[in-house]
Length: 216
Ligand SMILES: [Zn+2]
View (cartoon, helix red, strand yellow):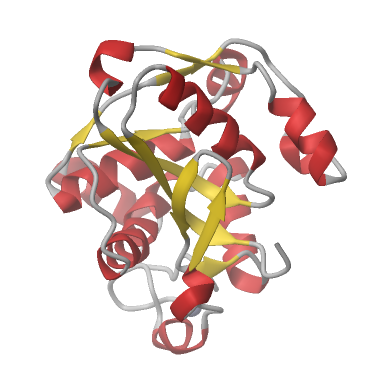
């Protein structure tokens, strides 16, 4: 891991993951540390069907949005590290207790194309920071059109219905699961995944995402 970090540092010499300015060390510059659109207080928390509590530290707009797009589609997979700092503070601050961490998985086709599962990197990074177990508990059984291409909430719900299945019900049974994703929009994907986990026997499902929409 150290070697990988060192190599990444050569390729991407300490640029801010949000505004891309040189930072002189680290992935967050001083101005972004002060000015990123952070959620605060009750606005960090949302609830969705089957999801006890969903937290997100940032709003999906401006440099946060551009950063997450580079993370998902621009190959900037090393951004998981700075995102996990925000995530772990937010999970801690909202006193979410869980036994196991998992993530909303990509389809095999998208995983092949992208080369990495952006939500998995976040889940693993968060689990390492919190000292918790991380395991794949879900699989995508149908390749649906991207949620971002869907208009209304009803269409988004229909688009994810039946798309996920439990991968390892034994490991989910009786556990408080924390489900990790990069962005939460209407919560349709998180709700669907949480329903699958509850049916598989999970005691409860909470969720954490790097960023949320301000208007949802
Ligand atoms: Zn910055």
